Length: 304
Image: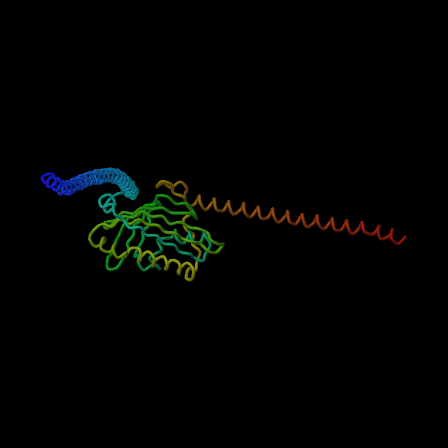
């Protein structure tokens, strides 16, 4: 009996022991899995942080380099524009780019533009232009909206029938600009105007937000196109000199003399080409005559 009771107790405790063992095994597996997951996520987080730090550092360096280069370009433009108000202090500028096709030959278009002291006669924005005796500087007065502005312009480079580069300085802003002339056809010229405008003062900066300067330039270019194409009655003499680095290297008179020499050389070349063509025609005629003369004996031989 006693042995039977002891055997039953042992059988009853065996399921409990197995259950406890399984529970401990489950707990250990859970702790192990949790530890492995923590280790994996922690390592991934560290690696992600390292990658993000490296990428962020490179991006920061690249952005800093780009900003530095842009700042250098702006500063260089401001220095070339003569610094001053709006250029060296503020550093902010507006780019104005306009193109215009005019139905006249290249030289005529350039010569009309060089007579900018006549702009006030047909441009609504330009009130007056006074050209100085040095052929480099000029004083301008213009009206943009309700504001009247005046400035002094200095030509830095001027090449006949090609381009004019200038800077200007005024109480309400400064500019740096280039106008170039391009022959599209014998009687069609394209004008390209590129201007960097540095506003100074509250009104100028406010007007700059509305791009008033660009609209004024665009309208005056159209007035120039209309005048040169339809209204100009006399050919413009222009200014045929040359300016390099702010210095006159060839005067207007010297430029005219060089132009006349070039025209004479072109005329002589055309005459030589005409004479060569005439001589070629004469030689062709002589050869034709010889061929006709040589055909008579052959005809006689046939008669025999």
